[in-house]
Length: 206
Image (cartoon, rainbow, N blue to C red; front, side):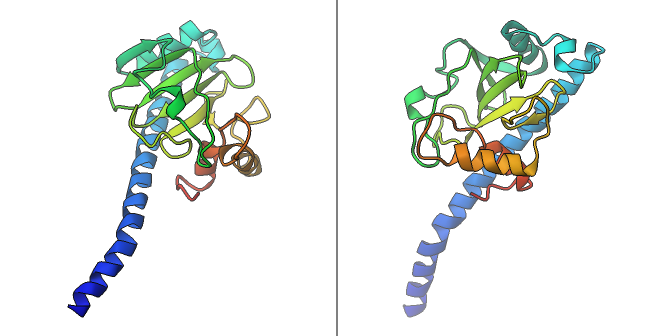
């Protein structure tokens, strides 16, 4: 009985941690899968258009951006300009510190893997931004866990939001972005989580 009691106590202490680690790894796997698919699609897009950059290939508007995803991904739900039902309602999204975050984009889609995202064309420092929820409407809907702000630059590279108009970002820039945005208890920005994952070799260490 004493042995069983000890086993029960140890299990109660370790199982929640194991489940949390498993869930985080699941989010990372889905994030990495989308990253790879997007990277390949961006290369194909430039190759198909005989171009050396995304803008040269024709990615110059929100309409072009929407068409890119419809041509290179299997879209199972096109929500247009409406966030739901592709993503959860805006009020459900928080950052790690519990702060409300915004997910406003110009278009929303869900792909065959079950991942959903909002798209926003800027054409500036970065060409477009993706707010990717790796498991769609399902929780926890927390930035840095299952939803990530991802930025795509004109050279076709995928990174976080940096201070310059070129990627990749430096290690230091990603760390600063993480500390000043991803985990902050105030403010409205919530990028920086994705860059931290890139810095830590695709591990969720925070």
